[in-house]
Image (tube, rainbow, N blue to C red; front, top):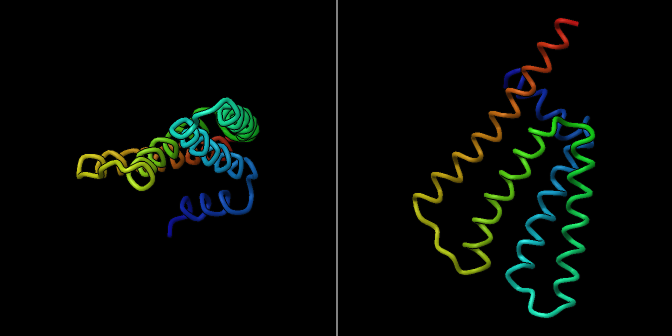
Length: 128
């Protein structure tokens, strides 16, 4: 395992609470998207709106401690992959080679962005 990989794991698991907020905002995004598919009465929509409000609060908290571009890329990536998988496993959608390929590309892109941000941060610290 490289130093960069160790640093990423350490930050995600222990150091930066902002990553917890990224995970929560991503999870709540999936909740309200699922709600969009099943809401059929006014009180269902109230729950969906409540989930959206909580979701954006977590998104705001995540952006306080991490670069906004990184937060949004991870949030959007997890949302995209999660929504595609939710469509397949919960809503009766289909999974094909094309979907798998593009899900893989999204995941690689999000991981690569995080590695690039970490390297930039290490370069800034080295200059200081």
